[in-house]
Image 1 (spheres, rainbow, N blue to C red):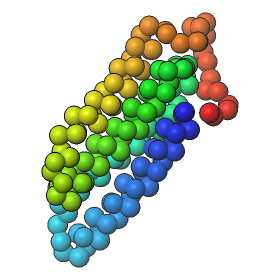
Image 2: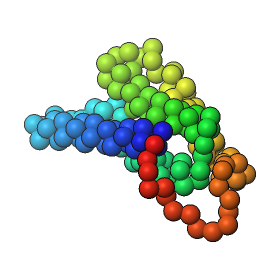
Image 3: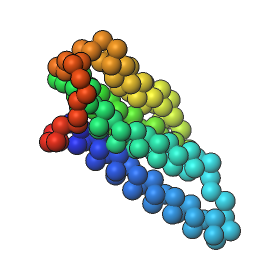
Image 4: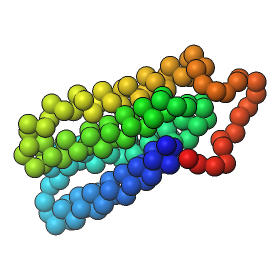
Length: 139
């Protein structure tokens, strides 16, 4: 599962960088960059960096089982959903999709609340007896 978070993060950064290059082409050609493009670009960049961080935080906190699956699925859905609806809703004129921003944002919030719960309650397989390293193997 953490491999999914990390891969999604790196793919998101590649997409964000590609959009950034397109924005540069627009600017160097004398055109302005639409606000919706900038907004989606910024959201995807930040959320992708956090996906990579989550890929390390999940095993470090020993989030397992259903909670691990939920954190991964909810986060990846939100990571792509938030900038996706900005680009599709405003950029492609599919404004009908814009209210789904609450769904995608809710996915991100839920994944963070699960991580908060595990952090505060210690509801994981790890015992707090000393420093723990990140597992060598990725799943």
